[in-house]
Image 1 (tube, one colour):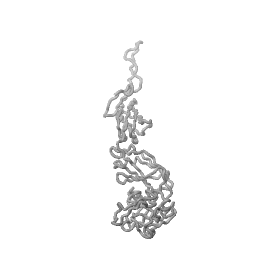
Image 2 (tube, rainbow, N blue to C red):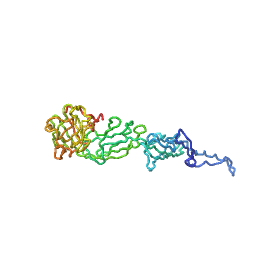
Image 3 (cartoon, helix red, strand yellow):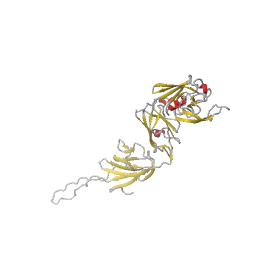
Image 4 (cartoon, rainbow, N blue to C red):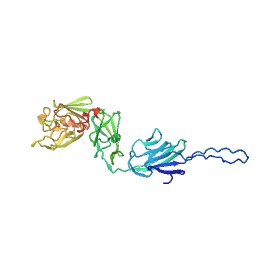
Length: 403
């Protein structure tokens, strides 16, 4: 390997780059002979060392390719202390890092970028203060597999106070801590957000209590260079801002068949409804509107307990607001008749009075038009079980201490 600069000797040490450089300094003067005038000769001063005893090692080695963006970069020194380390990408931006307290090593504080090119410049000095420098270049790998993460947030959208950000991957996540470090929340009111994993492919984020109305939130995803599983990377770097709207929380009491709607702390409506009949009892617990469709298709396929002759397939159910992944909705209902407000006649949904194809002038139309994704709907006094925290955006049913 050719010398990187004049007066630098190069050698290999453990696959890393090791350099010993000549320091600048004057040479000692004086001769051992007598002077011309017969006076005794003076003793010459000892010459200052011209080669530093410090040896710098840079990992990965010079010219390395396909380097992992995390854990591979390190600068160390033997017989000396590091005095400066600079790592820059192809764009000229410096990579943040720290020198250890003993001055013997440097490492980056974060993850490098995939498909990047980097230059390392290091300087060290030995005990005598004689300096040496070293440089190296390398490139990071280009991922062959990515996890295709996707969430339920739209840029610039407005959501209700119960909104939970749900991030899902199409592959199992092995390094969950790395994913958590790669997702951060910026909030206008400094609300603390915590993650909770449901299995190996889904992580949800929420505050301890419902969001404050008007809060501005930005989710920062920095997962592109994060190895979430061996050989699999996060695949996305993006920022997603959204806003929390007014507070709107509805409580559906199955014992009275009335749903009380509270907006910004004030009761604004009391809506008659029908809930799940015996054998199809509605879930109890706090749920969140996760999807809204003016019309949707509902069928008995996959509904437990359906007997022959009870099958149904409706392709135009109006004002549909989905509450759970298992298929619970608040929706318009034109077929339950007098059951609405008096008895339970559905297969688990909260049915609100509507016309056959949906009208903005009905109870269901009013409820739909005043709702947002992220609004809260809590069902109480049903004979059904409590909804699971992973069923839709129902994480509010899990205590904060367990989140």
